[in-house]
Length: 118
Image 1: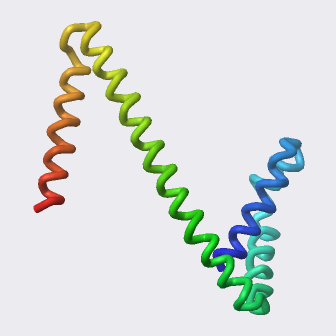
Image 2 (image 1 turned 60 degrees about the vertical axis):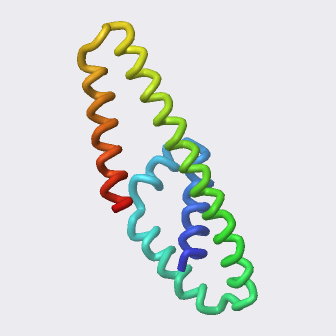
């Protein structure tokens, strides 16, 4: 089923790339057609050979691992950016709300980490 959804989302993505009125109408509407398309793909996937699905399984495992690493890096970058912004605001205003947010976030995250470890 995941292969069918992958193909469906790739199809919708290619249509939306044109950025025309037709693409907007297809993206926001046509739910009956899209539902029938997914169902037809599901039924058609019953005749896909197992050898192909084994290859797809291996590819999906590696791509999902790379995607998780990418998501982890993005979360780390955002955390550094938020921390730098809050610290710069704290330094500029010498106290205030940014300092409270930094201390509150530190205490909450540290508490959750200790709870998770225990």
